Length: 311
Ligand code: NAD
Ligand code: UDP
Image (cartoon, rainbow, N blue to C red; front, top):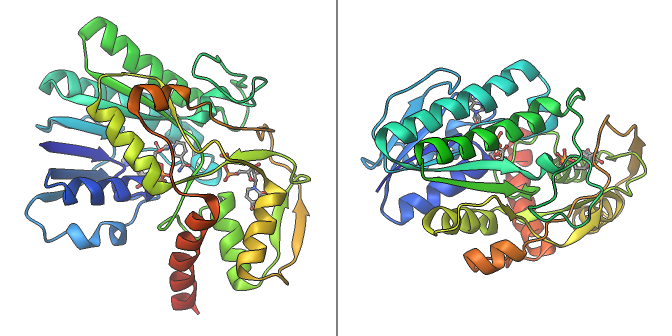
């Protein structure tokens, strides 16, 4: 199959491309390299079944493909808040053009949506039926409202044009190739512990998240794409940890002497988050297999190599 991966040079996209190439597909990686890097896809650049397209999805593009994994969008708050209007354009115009492309060539398209569509949830854990608690004017709105419109567009293309859609709501995912300066909690804590600088806990660290290792997530995306269920479906690891617990686990794994410091909690930071994955289990036969400590070992190994190269 000819498969387009938008955002393919990014963290999740590049792991997905590894799996698709290993399965013998022809892969088109489309990226504008905002948060993605060529080094993530370096090993495929000379492969004749791999093509790299430098393109910004806020402009239309014509391509011939069978499937589209639509992942292009910065995922970390510091990156998506750097140019919020651009984030909205990426989510709205970008998704509109990708759905248009899917419609034109009759391709199946999977939208990478997010647990952020639930905002700061007052239902816990979050099932797909929960409609969310999102501020439409807050600092996170460019991302979470952007993704909500992206989901709406996907479902309207499906209803109006019979476009073959799949919608995944991805919860916090971590693993090798996250950017060192990504600003997300797992990468921050690992890099800080490796560098021997204090781990920065925002707020009192009682807010919770659930962390899914990237290979588990990629397996879920591929099952969703190739199954019959269109979604939206939560993909995440139900293991829930407070941010303080996460800091202590990483501290224990890298540097028990590392200091913890407390910084102000960012605006609209969700207090708790845990996926209800009943639908993923029953419709996709999917659930995560990698425990947090095992996944962290793999992520730490990758960061250790990169941090030591810097110094
Ligand atoms: P990432 O930032 O590593 O990857 C995003 C990729 O999209 C990058 O390569 C970037 O350069 C590219 N991109 C951004 N804007 C673009 C544009 N306008 N045109 C073309 N390319 C563009 O992020 P990730 O963690 O790999 O996330 C991938 C997708 O999964 C995103 O859509 C994100 O919203 C979603 N998601 C991720 C998480 C997570 O925890 N990582 C959680 C929920 C949802
Ligand atoms: N966080 C933290 N220290 C950091 C980075 C993040 O305490 O150095 C907190 C952040 O405030 C949030 C949680 O960790 O409560 C997860 O943040 P991240 O940006 O990784 O993901 P998101 O908030 O988008 O789920």
